[in-house]
Image 1 (cartoon, rainbow, N blue to C red):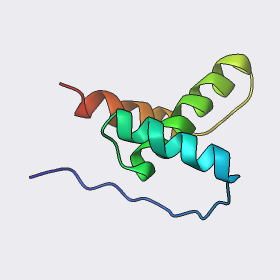
Image 2 (image 1 turned 90 degrees about the vertical axis):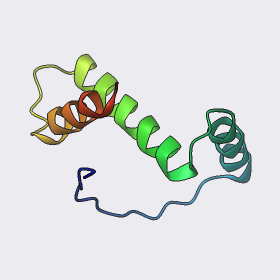
Image 3 (image 1 turned 180 degrees about the vertical axis):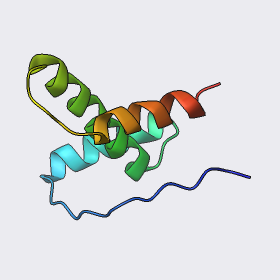
Image 4 (image 1 turned 120 degrees about the horizontal axis):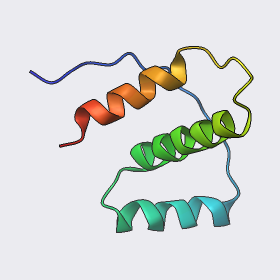
Length: 73
């Protein structure tokens, strides 16, 4: 049985050129737009945490990394 994760939802507005570039990139990786944007946010969160290690970011980033590693073969 697949794992179930609680997910919140956001709505965002992007400039058309950013939206189209993201759509093309997601398509080239065979990802949905949601999966592509989710990965982009996860990557930016990791980079931000690495740049600011003294700040407390809470469990969200750690849990996200654990889920990602758990679902990779």
